Amino acid sequence: MTAQIREVQRSLSIFDSKGIRKLLKTMRDENRKRTSYLHYLQQSRLTLLQLKSCLRKLATRIHREEDLTTECLVEVLVRFYLEKNEQFIRNFIVDFQQLHVQDERTDTVDKTLQKLCDKMIDDQIWQGAKEKHLDCARKYLERSLMGYIYHFALYPNGDADQFRDEVFHKSLHEIGKTITPDHTELRIPQKLHGECPWPSAQAEIAIINAYKSPRDKMECVLRCCETIENLIALASGQSSSADDVTPVLVYILIKANPPALLSNIQYVSGFYGCRMRGNEAYWWTQFTSAVEFIKQLLNKHV
Amino acid sequence: MDDNAGTSDISSFKVVLLGEGAVGKSSVLLRYIENKFNNKHLSTTQASFATRKLNIDGKDVELNIWDTAGQEKYHSLGPIYYRGSQGAILVYDITDERSFERSPAANPIKNWVRELQEVLKGSAALFVVGNKIDLEGTRTISKETALQYAESVNANYHECSAKENINIDSLFDNIAKVMLEREKDAATNLTRRSSLRRSNSRRTLQVIDDDEAAARPRKKCC
Image 1 (tube, one colour):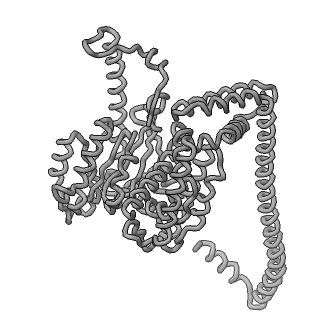
Image 2 (spheres, chains in turn brown, purple):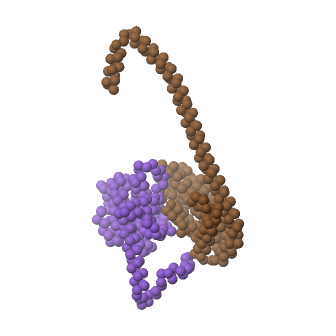
Image 3 (cartoon, helix red, strand yellow):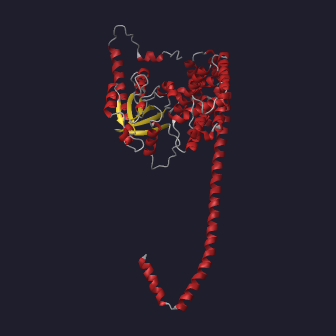
């Protein structure tokens, strides 16, 4: 740097004052010309960048559309396949209704699903399918199959289960009228109150009955819990810990009060319990323990 | 749910973090997650559950670490959390007597140990962990007391500081090691026992062939 400055000084010393003035003038003109070119370049760069992001957005949209279309196509194919095997399904439904022990029911469903899957994959249509598509097909197969037996599977004891759910639902409704985040049994820290009453998390869990297959219900619970986590992290500015999540989850469950909550828990544990892994298992445990806690809470209030 | 350990090459273990509120359970977990992955950009909004793959003496191990709510009112939910876990980390604050030994009646660590032994029947590796050793000056529970207690209940003892990142990695490495050894022992015990059973039918013990036992449908779970 110093060397460069010295060199400039040396070159300048050659000129007399007239020469320097001329030099400055030339430099000024040059600078003006180049500035406008620079502006032009910057502008072009901006346009190009915008175009690039636009294209990227379009690409993701197309990918998403592709995924959706494939899913739709897979669903249609699965439906065709199920229609072809109507008799088999009908037998399964009859068989299922005769079983009363949860173990046997789970076992029958698992076996039937496995059988249907294996048979389906043997079909010529599925020969070139990717693993991703097969997974998707399995999901739809499970969804349809559980849809057929949904009512029997959700309420294994018929009216008794429905009655129990109703009682629970009513008690939750009662307790929900008076409960606040500061309730002595909850004591949600003040710093988390910003997002209260966590409507997005409530909305997630409130629609649990819209899902029919245990896998979809599990995903619904997972989404609810993850929403809580994110909201807690937003409100407190630090990572969410179980100390914070549990009371908030209890509060949300009381407020959202989804119908048939107890039957849903029994249903998912029965038909999905042994497939839960890692993350799912953890959040399912959080969820069921929150419901256990609510039961204790109700007992105290009665 | 989590009893698939040992079915594949990779051993999968469930470890629960237990302890009073404010002893730093979540901080221990958070420090562990961030430490391992501080060079990758990882959003750590989640500090209540973590899965980590470790390599212990050439064997791949997957740790599922579960944080639990520490407030006293949730203690009754404990069994739901630690059911099926292969390891439990009992955290207390070395500067807070109440988190270790409040009184003979309300005694957090001892209560947890007793409960865990009752429910899990000694199948889980227990680690008693003193946190906040960065506050050595205000320590109220001596290392000897805690160590002695841990030994008396057949648990391992460890001290760490989540804040200053002291002994955090080694805690999880150690527990993985212990669980791996227990798994190995359990496997050899099982084969030994079943071979014993097959070779000599003893007194009142009814002998059921393994294949036969497996073939019989399981009944009644509730």
